[in-house]
Amino acid sequence: MYILGGTSSEDMARELAKISGEPLLEREIRRFPDGELYVRLLKKVENEDVVIIQNTYPDENIIELLLLQDAVSEGNAKNVMVVIPYYGYGRQDKQFLDGEAVSAKALAQHISLKADRVILVDPHKEHILNFFSIPAQSCSPVEEIANYLKKKKVEMLLAPDKGALERVETIANLMGCEYDYLEKKRIDANTVVMETKSLDVKNKIIAIVDDIISTGGTMAKAVEELKRQGASRVLAVCTHGLFIGNAIEKLEKAKCDEIASTDTIKSKYSKIKIASAISKIL
Image (cartoon, rainbow, N blue to C red):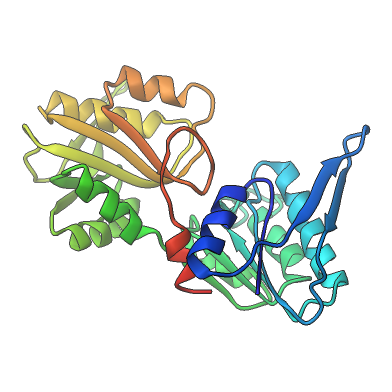
């Protein structure tokens, strides 16, 4: 078996190769002067199993993944497994308005053409897996997140809304700590507050956990509310740290004590490695 990392996931590929004991597949990836991508494998893959690790975010990484798949397919690999740490376009999983493209489905169909199996890390919605025409499964980083939060001596977990509660409940059970979710409550036309349903957060170390931190608005409001209620420390934690625009500034302004994400999307906040979770289901 070979582990083949795309440019968005090189560190994760190296970590997975180290854990699994399988070799990295050397490749050349560069751009022509006109911006088009060049991909070449530097070892033969005929009759070999190949695991490709690459994000589909931002857009240029989609083209790279498709070309890596083609190179492996043209090399007559025996089995091609695609691991997508962050599945870009996963949030457009249905038609919200007439005439829209269902991008999560369209992308899945293209990836399925030259792969035998696909793994998505913590997809936004599980039913996205059904869009692939090949066996597809999700990989959960809950154990890795739980271990990280234990080291931080977190005493309570909160979901920023009810939709994220299942993930938080699973992590809390692994840690043996309390959990709850924040609820939005409208006071008047201009005022919305977020509050816990039942738990006392005063003087406690709290982690708010979600799958994605994008613009940071919801998470910042949650941090702000917990600080108002007297939490001693508040951590903003997620699987996929997009941190778009001034997201970090919003969280810092809300007095967030720490920002942490897994390494699905590489940034200075990628503090939780998840290659071990992937290795368990290869």
